[in-house]
Length: 106
Image (tube, rainbow, N blue to C red):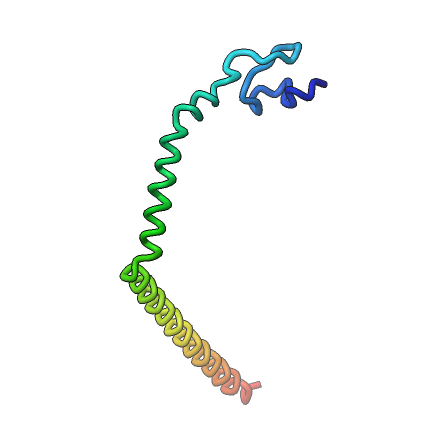
């Protein structure tokens, strides 16, 4: 087996098509043009995204807004958990009541 072309015989898993001898055919270098054309674009997009994230993370108003939103969300979750606990206790009390109610009939 030719180690240079590990996907010989499986064209769907290969970036290129090979003939019976294992020689590349057709679109062997298709990916290289894309990478060469977009290197500067990718770099500039990455720089812009990094600058935006850095700005947001160092902005005091943004930090305060995130903290306030997190605090409100946590408070809501705590309130809902307490409400759920109360409902569970009420349900348990009702079950005990009905169990004791029907104990005398047996």
